[in-house]
Image (cartoon, rainbow, N blue to C red):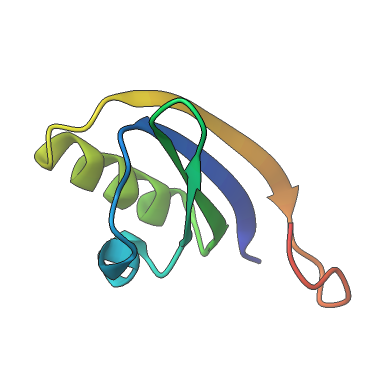
Length: 76
């Protein structure tokens, strides 16, 4: 079952990168930060997102796990 994650990084990431980050939503926050949020199918997908952050030399601020998504939750 997919699980919801929020990944906060330093800097503003362009929305065109969404597909590269497992189609996670990209939200610009105040203070020059970006929030990547959405469901990921498993831990391997989460590690893939974190590896891409590393490969782009972005600064990881936090990772928050929101728990499993149920079919009636509609999101995190």
